[in-house]
Image 1: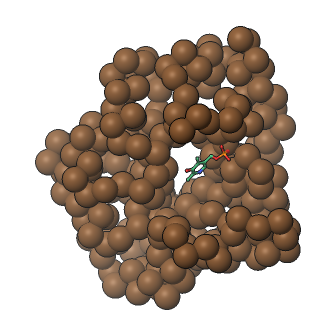
Image 2 (image 1 turned 90 degrees about the horizontal axis):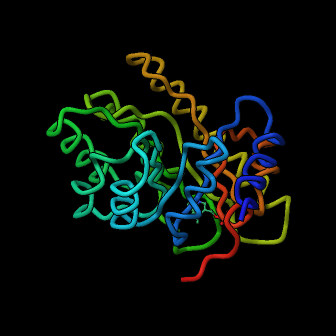
Length: 224
Ligand SMILES: *Cc1c(COP(=O)(O)O)cnc(C)c1O
C-alpha cells in the first residue's frame, strides 16, 4: 500500500514549478490520506462538509483542508474552523456568509470564486455575466475576513480537447479580470487558478492553471 505515496510523489515531480497539487481524498478513508501524508503531502480536498470535519478531527493538524464541493449555507459554520481554502464560492450570499462566520470565530479564510463555463447545466458557479456583475459591484473589497485568492472552474465533460482548452482559457480570462479588479482596490493576494482534474490537468496547466485537484489518479476509483 505504498502505492498512494508513490503516485503522489510521481505527480508532484511531473508538475511545473508553481503548480500546487490538491489531493482530492473525498470518499477515501483516513488510512489512504495517511499514506499520502507519509509521502510529505499536506493539501487535501474534500467535497462534503461532514466528511471534511470528521477527517480533520481525526487526522494531523498540519493538514490543509480545501473544500471543493457545493457548500450549503447551513454547513458553513461547521467547516469554518477546519478549512484553509474554499474553492466553491458560487453565490454572493455564500460569500457574505463565509465572511460573517470567519469574522465570528476571529479568523481569515482563503476563497476562490467558482466559475461556470462548461456545457453541462448542472454545475454550480458564476456564469461570465454573473461574474462580471459580482466583480464590478465592489463587494469583494468590502469583506474583511475572506481573502479572494482567485477562481476555480471545470471544463466541459467532453472528449473534444479543443472545447476543453477553450473552457480553460475562458476561466483564465475571468481570473485575469479578477486580478485587475482586486489590484485596483486593496492589493489582496489574488494568485490562484484552480483548474484541472485527473483526466485534464495537463491541458489545464497548459492553459494557465496553477492549482490542480486530483483524486482518482492518486487514490483510485471512488466507491460512492
Ligand atoms: C472530485 C473532484 C475532483 C477530482 O476528480 P478526479 O477526476 O477524481 O481527479 C476535482 N475537482 C472537484 C470539484 C471534484 O469534485
